[in-house]
Amino acid sequence: MENNFLLKELEKHKKLLSVTLLLNSSLEPSYIYKKTIEAITEIVNAEVGSLLLYDEEKDELYFHVALGEKGEIIKKIRLKIGEGIAGSVAKTRKSLIVNDVKKDPRFFSKADEQSGFVTKSILCSPLIYRDKLLGVIQAINKKDDENFSNEDLNLFESFANIVSIALENAKLYNKLKETFFQTSFALAEAVEKRDPYTGGHVRRVTEYCLAIAEELGLNKEEKENLELSAILHDIGKIGIDDAILRKPAPLNEEEIETMKKHPQIGLEILKKVKHLSEIVVGTFSHHEKYDGTGYPLGLKGDEIPIIGRIIAVCDTFDAMTSNRPYRKGLDDNVAIEELKKYAGIQFDPLIVDAFIKAFQRGKIISQSKREKIYEN
Ligand SMILES: [Fe+2]
Image 1 (tube, rainbow, N blue to C red):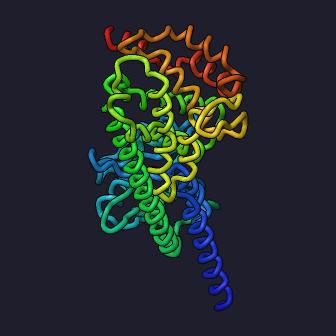
Image 2: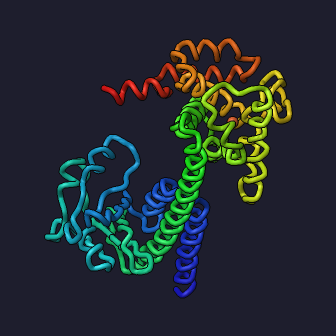
Image 3: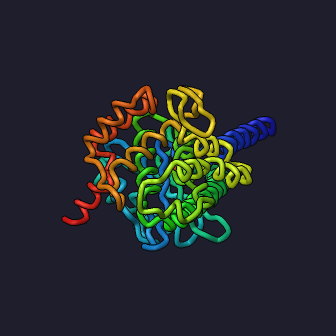
């Protein structure tokens, strides 16, 4: 008897430990949501698990659901704090077992009516981190027609604690990352503001790069590195003299040589930030050319980091299609023809292909197109 009890306890702890490891293996909220919902059913042997997140502004709970036929319906359901079993749990911040929902006046039947699901029993726990309500988790319908027990409740509460910590960690990490991206963007814009003719260049180049990343199927980390490189690609222009940077006419040869120093200046600035090594290779190589005639190193083909090859195409397209005081920007289609013409010479043909696909899908909106949209 005692052995049986110990074995059961051990089994429970093993389950919790494996879930803890799983949830802590990612800082991606969507991954944590998905794994939480999957783990709920396993932890307390339930038919379905659901996760409701707290919307602080509206003081409501809303379902987090994976996309599916019923997902769209459930997604629209919102519960006021205090409404339904989940809302009550959020309000009292105390877990609840309801083994026959029909007999409980708090049961919110709308979700069942709209989704066609039949709820019989619910085990619900709040997600709380340092006194802050994050949401609630629900295990619905104990399998084999059994009732949820106090033992289930204890286990579920421990699980809720693990989920809360994982969610809060992910939230903090993403907030920090967002702040870093916004700071980088502010810095890039500050540099851009010195040149009154290139307004919006950084934003457009970054958008174009992300459109290419989508076409190429880059993963999340590659996309983030590309985005940050695109934001910071011309940061080295901070070291270029105003007389050159703001010159309202084409540059002479000497000025061009000075201007060519900006990738090196950018490298000097960014290399001081320890975790930016992936980004630096991209910004440093955005003026390399596919045939090896670019600068600063004269790299050729695949020797040029892919981030550099992507920025090169986007940077050039934006420069061609944007108006300058001494010339009008090219028509989009003419600029696309230019990219095609120089594919394999100046640009990586695969990147040009991806750019054209993104353009045809309407993902590339040039400066002049934006102005037309704005006028209308
Ligand atoms: Fe540049």
